[in-house]
Amino acid sequence: MPEHKFTATLRALHDGGVEFILVGGLAAAVNGAPVSTFDIDVVHSRDAANVARILSVLEALDAVFRIQPERRLRPNASHLASAGHLNLITRHGPMDLLGTIGRDLSYQDLIPHAVELDISENLRIRVLDLETLIAIKEELGGEKDRAMLPILRRTLEEKRRR
Image (cartoon, rainbow, N blue to C red; front, side):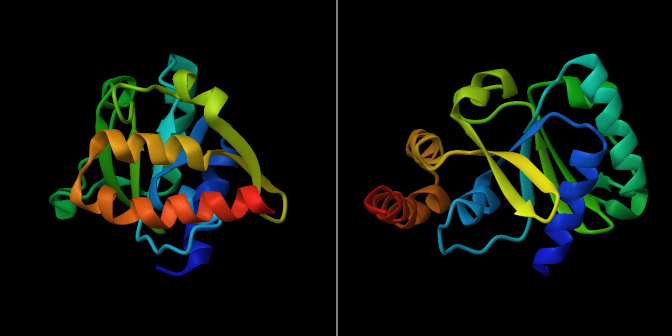
């Protein structure tokens, strides 16, 4: 998926007033890691007002669940208020909305570990820092997580040297 599709989705979330933190592969790439990804992963605030804003943005993005997209099943407020993961497809491509990551880390838990970065012109968002991305991937220990760890560690070393 072209990079501009990521930007369009992030801009829709940002402009919709959604409180979220970019995590996962795209967060690693934005932090300077030489990695590719095919979706957007965000941890969102699960408070009622933010859930309402997310639902509005998801409607504008024509978001449906990725499993059986032909059924056009849409997330609702109770889905977004849970700690679970919602794997969606939007008109711009795949997006995962996560209530928590790692060992039940919520949006509020992650705020101290997020940095604000300029993604494109007039688009500044919260992105999980490399140290925390590394720690979470170490905890999870999945195959993809273990494969990405050396790249993330090397990127962090290079950033610290600069």
